[in-house]
Figure 1 (cartoon, rainbow, N blue to C red):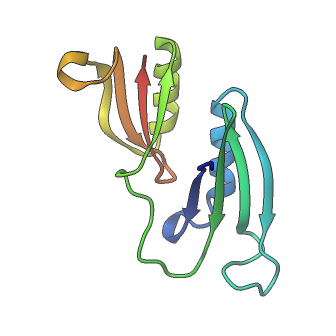
Figure 2 (cartoon, helix red, strand yellow; figure 1 turned 60 degrees about the vertical axis):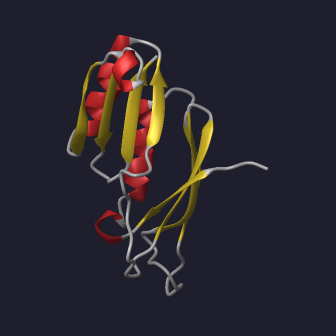
Length: 139
């Protein structure tokens, strides 16, 4: 049995999935877009510019993606986020800056006392401009 994170871009994020996965794969080493399959003209669920099914990897970890222009009662939430372990201060600083640009900082990137917060040396939490939530940790 295996699990994979599946991102569904709806509402104001619909139409931004391809841009988002190109952005994400540019930030992480050992990352690539595996497949992007678009809707056919007249196909239910989307239009030809939208992703019906996509798969990509971030540092070797697989993610899946789709878009739907139907009206949904949900979207992305910070209650579920992608947790990233960084190995250097430079790496965490650059990644947090790029991911939070145009998005929302929920916990500023700072040094934390792991005894008090449970985080390692440095931690930050943000949502990117596409609405995906990221927790970035320096281990």
